[in-house]
Length: 92
Image 1 (cartoon, rainbow, N blue to C red):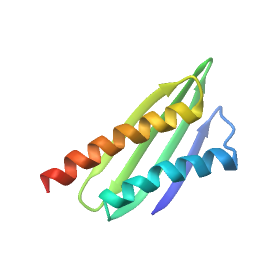
Image 2: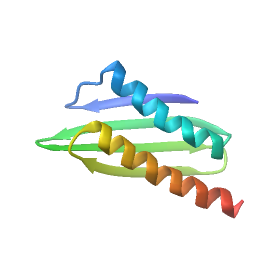
Image 3: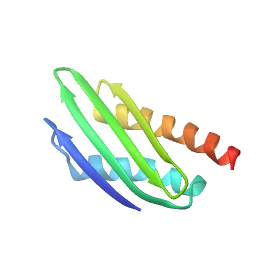
Image 4: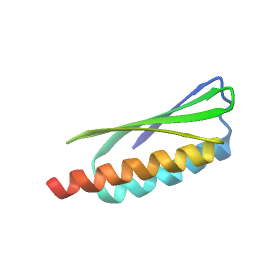
């Protein structure tokens, strides 16, 4: 799986990228055929927003989350994607 990072008015540190990669690694257990993930981190005043788009062979999953810092918003976004992946896996 290739992970693309985009920072809008945000500094993307290696620790933040590693945190996001760790959270997205959980999704590989449910959806085996993930081709690409795009993580967009945006900073608006005091709002840290994360948007993630996963492209798999059978589906495209999208989630957005806000939080007081990027770690919280990434974790919330990953949880939402995990719920979507479980629901999609159940349908298959």
